[in-house]
Amino acid sequence: YCRQLLDLARRRIAGTPVRVADEADVALDAFAAFCREAHAGGFPDLAHRDNLWSLLAAITARKALNLVQHERRR
Image 1 (spheres, rainbow, N blue to C red):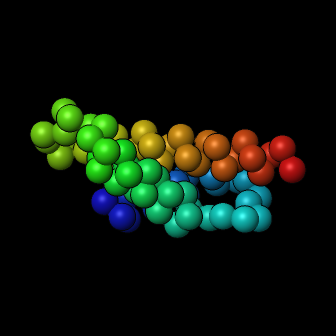
Image 2: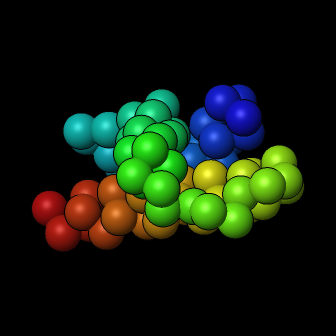
């Protein structure tokens, strides 16, 4: 899902001048957050790969929004 996460992050932060991070940082941060939570047993209902994509996309979109909001505050 790496390419899809990068594309999603790129679309979400498009038009925002980011200084500290880019779409790769957003995608990696989202995947790391997913891995931490999965390791802690936070996703017991992940039995199908469509569910996985939906979850990764939601986490990535939220991380991108956080980055955009952070950059606009500057």
